[in-house]
Image (cartoon, rainbow, N blue to C red; front, side, top):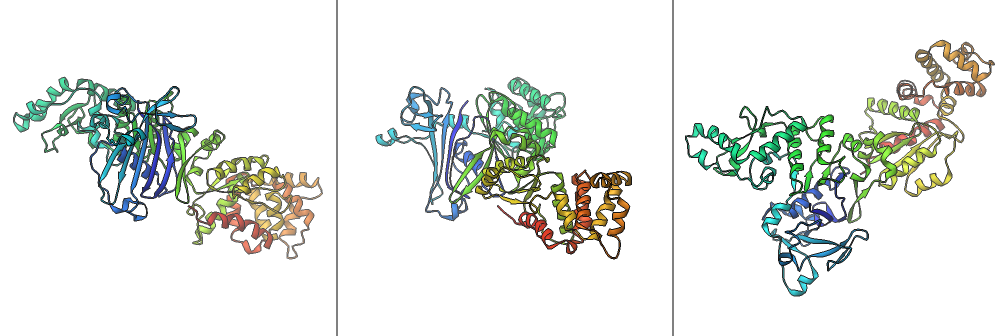
Length: 574
């Protein structure tokens, strides 16, 4: 099962330089739009596909600079017998050390025997393939792969135009299912109206093994094609060739009429069946055309949960469902710095965050919140700002991550996972418990930010302490509405050790004098800390309907403390 050990790309579209050592199973690329994810798939397809030409233009050169040639180099390992043939490729076989990711000119003990294939495109837009070896260069010889080997190595691609794989055409997955070859000449020699039926009878004999694999794959994947698929002449084809023969359901309807999702799912299942011959699969936008449960089924068909992996897959995604289902080792975050792109591996420590907040890995900016209260505050202000035609934090590309409360170190541990992967990252926390200084310093060293309240304040202390009396009165009334008069009364009595009562505090807040004192605010803050607003929904309502509309009635210090994370989250990045 040949696999790609190393990918090198230079001067191709948005990629000036990329060097990548992919894994043997699924390699799913995550990154912002126009980051180069699809370009990597296109580069692999161009270099390894069974083609002699391609539609290349000046726009395919980095920065439109045709003076600097496009170069795509793939190091191929796990070679089959034909690729290890010394007579054909002896001058080009090289040794690869996976531990040191180094390449030796000669195969040797402890080294994997590999071939290095390069595609170069210069200003004349001609595609030139060759195998790379210093020994061959010293001898002054040059060659490409044998065409039969190129056909066997050519990757299958699942994209918007994948239905050609559902016909017996050159390079299609159906042509790789078995050694059988369709012959439509006998059927096409009969009358045109009887041709499809006549060939349908012959196809059972010619393509029986392949049709059995198709029926089995469709059944396992839950794709409705009737009792059995048939190979009939495609009525839309005008070519009397292998391409005229396509898969149909049991009623004679071409399977290329399936929906996009079903087509991709079936082709993935067929590709799995031929993985021993053609082991490299390219998948543009894994989730395209599929419902969540079918996305999970597709990933299973690709081998996401299979050990050892049945095939090597290069994929892209913008789906949190895909991220949640995949292991951290199967994902790469595509970043670039200066002239170089590099896919970053996710550490094992990120697996929990990946399961709980996969959508955050799809955003350029991540605000890690200590708990649900901070999440609710941000969401409430977000909703109010959008209603006032102000910048949305989500439109700016910011994701909110909930750490579930507890010690503030948890927020920094989670934030560091994102910061190390190149995400613009910040922590929004209380200050009644202090994080380990070294952890906060580590986030700062990764250009991460911290937003918090005045020293030693919780969110309840900050909001109750900085709100006007009328705003505070509205907050208490909302707490009564949600939790009931009896519970709020009990909380006030407990927090004040029976020194204060709810009716008295409400009277003071609603009086013309507004004579509530700092000690009484402390009592209300302590009572609120018993759970008045400690869910996303509760604090979201407080922020949107009480705090934001009355923002001018908050103290300047509180306004500043709320504005800091909001302004950070509204800034577009990446």
